[in-house]
Structures are given as C-alpha cells and as structure tokens.
Amino acid sequence: MRIAVVDDAMIIREGLTRLLAESGCEVVAAVASPERLAPVVEADAHLDAVVVDIRMPPTHTDEGLALAAALRSRHPRLGILVLSQYLESHYASRLLQDTPEHTGYLLKDRVSEVGVLVDALRRVTVGECVIDPTIVSRLLNRPRPTTALSRLTTREREVLSMMAEGRSNHAIAAELCLGARTVEAHVRQIMQKLDLPPSADDHRRVLAVLRYLQDGSAEGRT
Image (tube, rainbow, N blue to C red; front, side, top):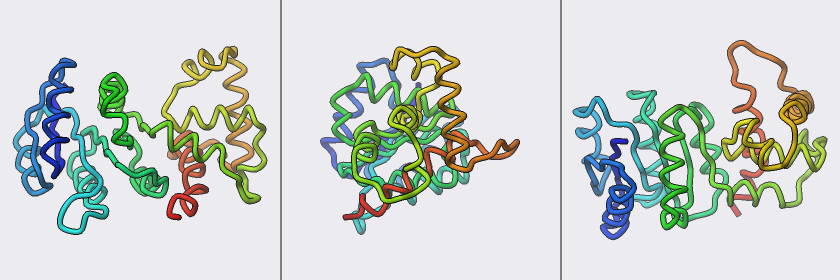
C-alpha cells in the first residue's frame, strides 16, 4: 500500500512512518499540515490511503475532519484513516455521516498495535468503514435512553457492535460461534427494529451503524 501521513507532531509522524514501512507499506509522504498534503495527493494517482491526525494547527480542534471531508469530495476512492487521542463518539459519527465508505476512525493508542493499524488501512482502501472497538464498546455498555436501539436484544446489540467495527457477517459468526444464517437473521431483526426498510440506494448496514453512533454522540461530548 502507498500511504501518506499528516500529523503536526514530529514524533508521531516518524513513528507512523517507521511502523508502516516495517509492515511493508510504502510511505510516500509524511507532512505536518493539510496544506503540505494537498499537492502530494494531487500528484500521486496511485496513493491508496491517508492517515490524518484529527487535531492540528491552527485551532487544534477538528482540522482532521475538515481535511477528510475535502479529500473525500475530490478523491472518493482514497482510503482515509483518522487518528484521535480522544475517545469522542460524536467525531466518529460526524466523520462517517455522509460518506462512510473508505473511511476509518481509530484512537492513537492503536498505533502501537501495528497489525490493527495496517488492517484498518487495508480495509478502508477496499471501501469499508472502520470504527475503533473502544468507541463501540463504550457505546454498547453505557446506559441508554428509550430509543429504537432499546428494542434490540442483548445478542442483537452484540451483533450491531461488531457491525460498527466493520466486521462482515462471516466474521461475526466466527467470533460469536454462530451459524451464518443465525447472524443473517439477527441482522434482519436489527434492520426491522431500527426502521430501516430495504432500499436499492441506501446502505442499510451503514445506516444502522450511524444510528448506533448518533445515539452515543451526546454522551461522547461530555
């Protein structure tokens, strides 16, 4: 994979570059700002993915999200993996709201787990969306108000949490030691209970995950 990295912290940039290179990735650029990244992306037609810090100068708030949106509008098939030091589910919801394909959100703690990092990059390059399991776990375990999600059984919530991590039905079945048809039945029930009817245009799986994230957004801002 051909990867570009943008992070204003030199130590993080160099660490990511080394880890990715040792894992067989080609880091074509490691820059400190979105402005320096733009010409790299425009000049490299074979770039597979970009790793973006969520908070960068000048405001250190959501520059990474703005960069992700700009890249997505110009390069819809480019993989974008946003790294955050903060456990904030509303950032993940905002990132995936409009264009979840080819997009991921991981906590920076995952950087030390190079296998997780590289797997996430591979998945976003092929069009999947990836959400950090820690965010998924936090949303799953916190008390919830009465919403459509409250209709789900414990098993259905478990399946939905794995869907939120970007896992396929096959992977969910293997993890939970269930048959493929059983998982498919759970997914159908989830869609029905979340009022997501079949549609030729909408990705119901993504919509279900977004519903799940949005329910945790207010809690993530506290």
